Image 1 (cartoon, rainbow, N blue to C red):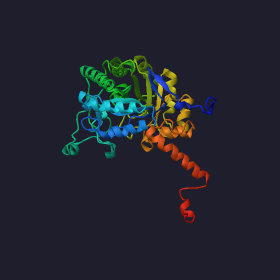
Image 2: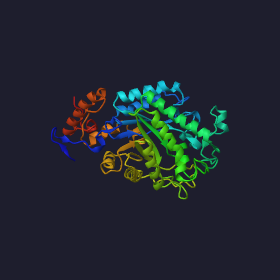
Image 3: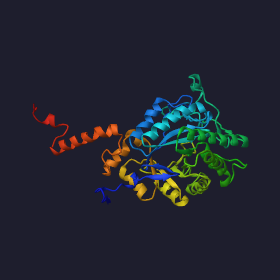
Image 4: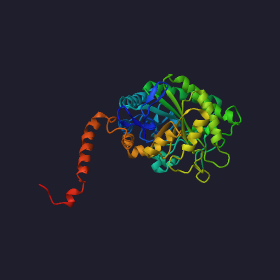
Length: 403
């Protein structure tokens, strides 16, 4: 670890160095990955979302990305997804973006269309497709769409194959949602092009068997997502970052997209206006008998992220079992990624970034919300004095009472 001679403190690890994109500066490279919470009604932000996401800004994250937000009602995963298909949804989103920005995080949002994987129950109900029993309870399924009439898996609904006019309408819906996102104050907009959702399903030969301008060879299968990227980039101000989440591989042994295919698409995506490639994997099929998926080890997307970074020259984000400060720092320092995104680890410890700084001896409470840091600093000093004196929380139970 290097030392800054001016203040005799260790120089910041790469994890805690700023990153500037399009004039937007992340004060560190640790971000919060978009995580669906299924807490909305009619796509509207609730107090839950403000508290849920706001605590990550308090916790020091440089970037906080709002969960998958549908560009139209039929693009929701479930009835309880957030949305940006209507101006009525702007006020709540503006409240989120304003709060995150005021507390030091770059406010981001992931725009999404679930395509043929829409109209399902929440994950605690196994994420299964909605059916008549849900309709009887007031949560009716809705028709799903995709590039071709191929269901996501056994017992999943047959999607309607979008025609050319419907595709044009869809591109416009993406752009309109992006316009709303920027108007709400988000400075980082991500397109969800992974996990079998609409953009991914057009790219993959598993789900796209069209024989028109939007299917067939790789370039034609890229056409729809590239049209979306160009339309969204045109709709966003120049100082808003555009990110695109990819599944680096389909996870299908026979006929699915591999890393070479996705790298080629990523090169086109960057040329069309994407600033950040956010690396994930899998999801093209809901059939667990054929979906091989990537083995989930620590930082299990890092090899993909490193390769996409090398092949595209883009800024690359990596997600997936990033849990340890040293691990996160090394991913950046070794060139695997430029940004690390944490999901469940942040749920478990919203102050993960602050704790990571302390573990690297970068600072104690300099970067905490002052209302917290001013109280926690003296507390830490007292704890250290007690430790130096040989005291532990159990000392009183091990010695006679001292009055």
